[in-house]
Image (cartoon, rainbow, N blue to C red; front, side):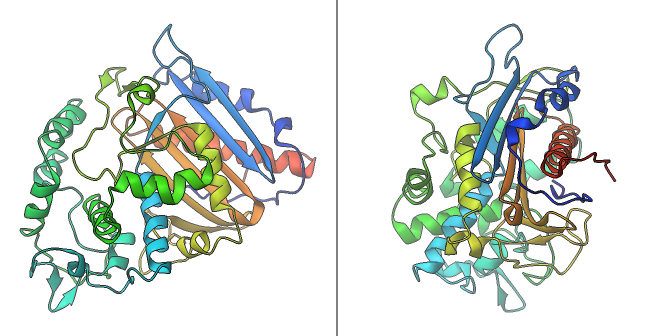
Length: 376
């Protein structure tokens, strides 16, 4: 994942978003032989716009506002919000030793007497491995086209109990909070802590505290039978069908699913300047090193934070599943957010989607200033 916040040379002002020529911008991605379909959602100053292109499966169904995509690691931002809510309810503190919420000693989860704290989970500075079980990490040493199937096979035979057992064998070799190292394991552990605090499943907590309050009925970890019918098939590098992401863990690190319509409402939530929880999650918790190659990047409650020269504050997150990818990029100072999904995933897809978001942002800037605009 890289930062979703790029520089521009102009400031967004008032203009309707339906004046933007999205179709012309979309042609670039439609001409890509690997991209079957994609959906775009834009929210700006009270206006919403969704657009859908291509065919989810060749010569078959087309995407709509009701199409459900895997949002992968964008799920982490929901976890950040829920941790902030628990913090606001005085149910936890970011300074808490995570072992306070584990039913065992876990003497290994510290370094020279310094424990992993909840804030370290939120910022990927916990020193926990990228994946548990560790066998998944080993698969990335020799990446092949079969990687999604290999990961899926391991995850389908894994469990929460085994996760907590494997956590006892993790070795912490650096002081927590001093080094950024992207981890899915830390987010799964954060979800376990939430379940411990609330006495409910992660899906139940997510629905109660975010989705019901923000009209997001199709945003879940575990879909209903009727929702699964609307879940897209994903495709990999060579157009090969990939497995859908299923997990027997909490699903907090990347098991979320949603629609472009729901994501528009999620963008609205992130743009609510009066929401103390939202404002808390967009505060920087870690900025001690270059993150994702950009020295201006900081980490909030899982959000990647940046400062665009003209658009101002930017929060973003990328999500990559086996055969789907998405970006969510939001500019709070401009009351602007863009979400884009596709049901194709490989190492280049992230950059392709970000290129579309950049072009959309440039066109929004041009429309809102009613003048010619040249990319930097």
